[in-house]
Amino acid sequence: MQWVGQLLNTSYVKTKVIHLLQDPRVTVHHRMGHGKTNLKVFRQVAGQVCKQLDTNVQYANDALSNNHWLQGRYMRVKMEEFHLDPVGMTQKIYDFIEINMNPQIQRWLFNNIPTATSDKGPTSETLHLKKNYRMPAWKEKFSGKELFQVETICKDAVHRLGYKMFAKNLLSRNLSRSHFNA
Image 1 (tube, helix red, strand yellow):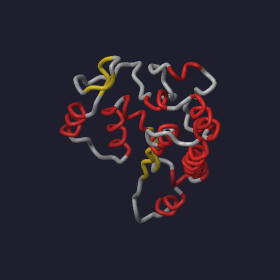
Image 2 (cartoon, rainbow, N blue to C red):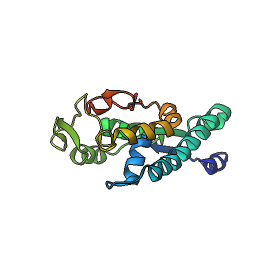
Image 3 (cartoon, one colour):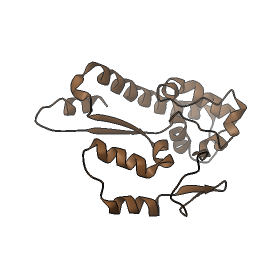
């Protein structure tokens, strides 16, 4: 993120940054794959992921607070927001970059982005998401020990980005419960 500040702090180039993020627990889940991994490696991966994410988010927060020229040139978007409202979030991005969204793009999103139609999971049969649908795969894949470890290591990033903690709470296995504050 730090090099982006230099790019944005120019008067002759109109640059905007869209910072796409996801829950660090999801990133750790994907980096670890689906096989068994020892806890030491798991902690190391979680530490790397969360340290970099937290550093980037803190840098952006500081830059937004201290640099008037950055206002209106930086947008933070959570992947989870896309899953909950793909068309709405795409429209917000188009508005941010000051371009009109082509109706063909909106139609493509309606026809190609999976949405939740049942408790069985995502399908592409509807244009609307169920209000209680969330992307819960990481919740059921982590063991209790792994979830506790990743949340302990990543607590700063999890909190800074507005996600909810679950490790000490039985609600983590409730797949319909949101894991972030929209």
